[in-house]
Length: 489
Image 1: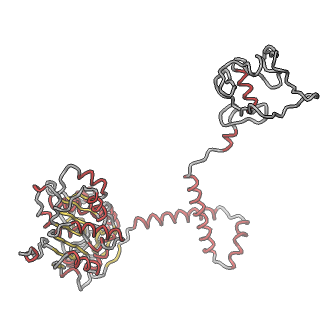
Image 2 (image 1 turned 60 degrees about the vertical axis):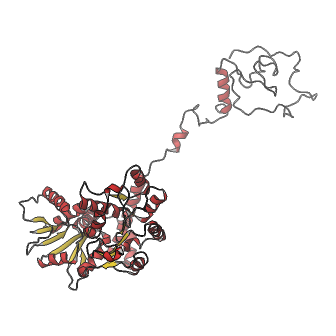
Image 3 (image 1 turned 135 degrees about the vertical axis):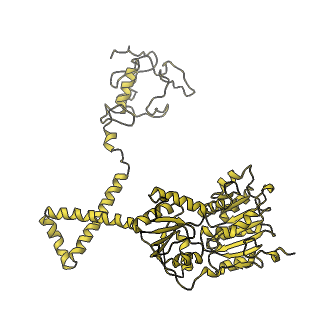
């Protein structure tokens, strides 16, 4: 019998199913419970593959799966990067994997992940995955081509659109479509929302309670783990078990409650309608930015943002500080020159406009000054110039104190081997009779063993020397010539 004819309608265990569910972690049990329950731990290979749009969604789905199966249940490994996941998957069986198509493709190419044993693949909110760039689409097609033909294909989307329908027609043959009838209501339910991230919900809840200060409120949790976590957090804020001001519940809402706060995105339209039946003053949902569109469809379009007062209060306090500073300057007395400089502008502009322009220049100058203070200070050039003579990298002014003078001092200090310029002929014999090893060119080295620190003269060629009147060289002949004894300096 064809497995597609044996579908269990509405249970999430269909062979090929397209679910239309709101973009919320509360919707995860509706499509992920079935694939996780069909995993055989004894097989020791990857049997469930979940594809999502990014690494943050992969971590959120892994956390939701952990709540479904418990600490001792099936682990859904989040692939945030292929390199890290490849190291974790080496040497141990991984039964379920969740990640973006790019990272899954890289794992398959590196042979860290084998898809031939996958029994079910889930596209968690395919509308977000298909909205990516060309590489995302190519990666998704590459992964889908590696899957076994008999693997169940489950597509989850927050709304029915052309790209999702085209993908379902190509990869999900005769797929069953599961779209709840209450996904879009006819009567709008007024809902306010506070944008949060996955890690800032608790902080946003505390700020929301500070702003609203409700006489009575109920916080709606979607599962037992979230309910326990929110209850402990509210106890820290002073809302203990005996407090009736703020309570935590999963379904029950007392009539005439002042505020109903959804800690996460509502799971369905029915849950929103149940909150509206209690006739609260306000319904607020803590939602991520990507969930706002789904919340708008679920509520029927009556959705407005709830603006927290903390950022606005901080901005107003800053502006009040600037006004106090300007008032103190005015009270101290304005100089006539400043008034005369600005008075011609009154022909074209109002006084408040001139003051606003001056304030903008002041803030710009302060920002530049703060930027200059943050830059590392450069070493002053004067520090290099003021080094004492004799250190590396410096050259004192004057010929006697320069390179030539320093070289003469070094020669005179090395055992008296050198001689000063203008002190007479060199002692110790002729140029050719100097002691020390000689190279192939016939030139010897100094007694110190190192080369001279000034350019050597060529061994041959004409030299610019003054000649005697008779045309001969001023130097005495080499034969029989002896240098005078070295003078004591």
